[in-house]
Image (cartoon, rainbow, N blue to C red; front, side, top):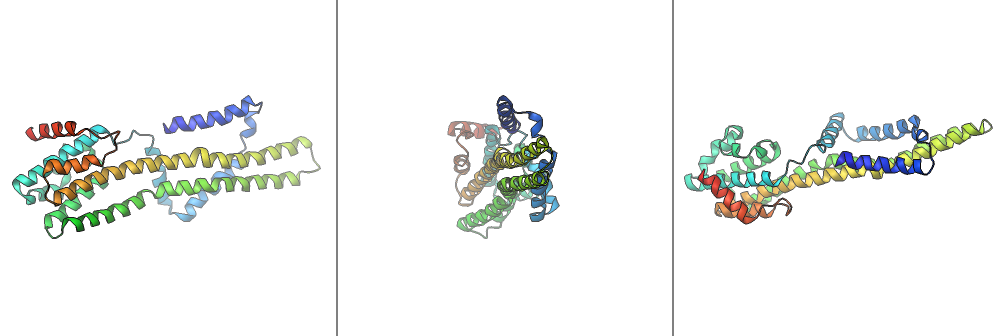
Length: 285
C-alpha cells in the first residue's frame, strides 16, 4: 500500500500536469531537487546522529513488509500466555524462572514464534515476569512500573516518525529557498534570451511545487504510516501488560488472557469463543 499510494500521488500530479498541456521534462529540474533534498537530509543530520538515519531508513523500508500483527498472531500469543499462567498456577511461580531466563530455549515461549521474533515484546514479558517472581511488588506498583516502561518505549519508538513529520513540515520552506535561488538566477539573466528567462522562472516554480508535494504527498503520509505501525506495536505490548497485571493479582488464567484479548483492535480481536476453544485445545495438547 505504501508503494501504491506514492505511485498514485506521482501519477496524479504528473498526469494532471501532462493533461493540462505541460511538458513533463520541465519538471526534471536537477538543481531544485538537489537543493530541497539536500537541505532536508542536512536538517536530519544536524538534529540526529548518522546512525539514526539508518534507523529511519530501516523502519521506512519495514513498511513494505506485511504487518506482523494479525489475528492468528494474537491467537498464538493468547494461547501461549494461557499455557504459561496455567503452568505457574499448577506447579508454582518458580517453575517459570528457567523459562524467562532463557526464553529462546523455553518450551513455553516456543509456542508463540511471533513473540520470539519480537525482541521488545519478549524482553517486556520476561523482565516483568521476573519482577513478579520476586514477590516483592504488589499489582498496582507493577502496573505503574509497566506504564513507565511502555511510555519510555513508545517515545523512542515514535522518534523516526516524528523526524519525518518535522522534515516534511520543513519541505515547503526548502522549496521556497529553491524558488528564491531560481529567481536570483532569473534576475541575473534579465537582458538575455527571453526563452532562457522563461526556463529559469519555470525552474523556480518547480522548486516551490516540489517542496509542497514532498511535504503532503511523501513525508507526511510515510510518517502517518509509521505512527500506525507503532500503534499496532504498542497495542501488542499493552495486551501483554494487562495479562501480566491480571496474573499478578492472582486471577485465573482464562481471566488473564481475556484482559489481553480486550486490548486487541476489534479488526484483529478473536471472539471469546475462539479464544476459549483454542486455549483449551492447546492446554489439552
